[in-house]
Image: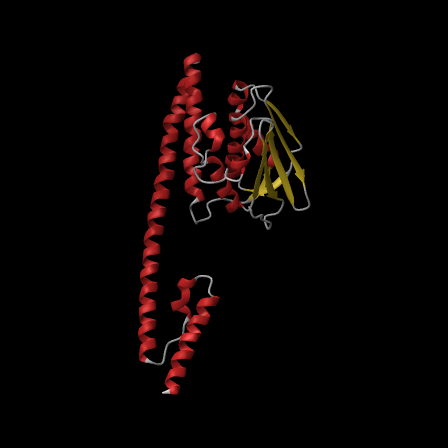
Length: 287
């Protein structure tokens, strides 16, 4: 009787020990040894059946997510055609009304891009390419894209010391920087608005800073700006905001191994810092 008890106890103690050491608890059925008594065999069978069912369910939802992502990417590709056609019509019929239409088309294009990158940020597969990129080229591409808003809001722009080589995905990085610059323009000061874009080279990284003299962010909002759907005081006071831009930026930075930080003073401005690795072997963690 005592021997039987010790056999059971040793077996269950072993299971408990394995479970405590496992980070991924669902792997337990694959880690435990075959039991040499009936109750243990039944437990093993039950655990393995549960594990099989769990894996089937995970696969089902992964397949659903992949189908949805493929649909979103196909939709984004298709919607770009009428947007491009609309822009062509505007270009060939320049007047005050079509200029306003062009401005709204730019907004639609921006929202469509948000949808695309939100979809990609949730995808477990690696659909980005890390390679050498000239930071100056990336910054100027984004500035060129926003030229109309710079002119409309009369924002002065200063770019300095950004001619550095970084390791990142160019398109993803342009999206991130575009979201930051768009926010700087949107929440710019009514008096002599200004945006300063600069970089500092460190031992193994390049720090890109985008700083404005806009309305700033209140203290109770600053720690929540990267939360999904968070609009904050500025989003309610100045414009209708989705609260998704910086949230997506943070997620993309995590995937790319970049670091993003934000600091702000009310009525003085906001500074966003992106830290890029100078080597494809280096990554940074967003705190």
